[in-house]
Image (cartoon, rainbow, N blue to C red; front, side):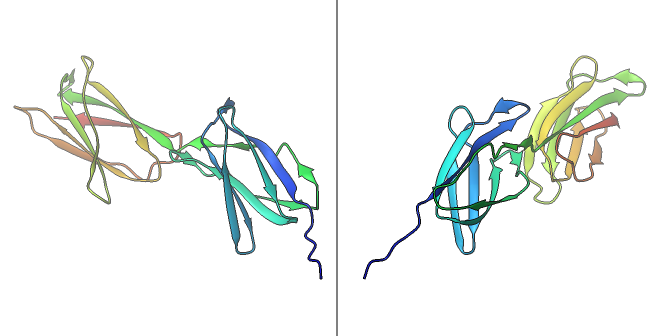
Length: 173
């Protein structure tokens, strides 16, 4: 007896972020109990040879929000090209101004903690205009502790930050 298996098909495409190629992204292929992956090249391109089936495909990379899933049906020997994904950075910006009365307060310590794990994730100081800015992982809420020797401290808590959002806070010491 001879066992014949159908010729593999191919799913190919590109992963980008902000219109730029995203190298090192992982593309996932799921069919039934099978999960396969491939990694994008330096130009964001990927190609995967797969057995004929219905495949759920999506892309992801640490620091980015996973793409939406698409379903691609592959027949023997078929190539499905231009299955492109655009990933959004999973970051948010927290900015603020530190004041003493109505005056800007420079060199105030700004310590930012993950509100759930209580782990310090960012430490910065306010500039000459009292301003500070920090890029943080979205999907979390944060506790911001602002302090300076000789002044009272102030604590603020953010809501859960959304990807590519910006939150502005003021602290009065």
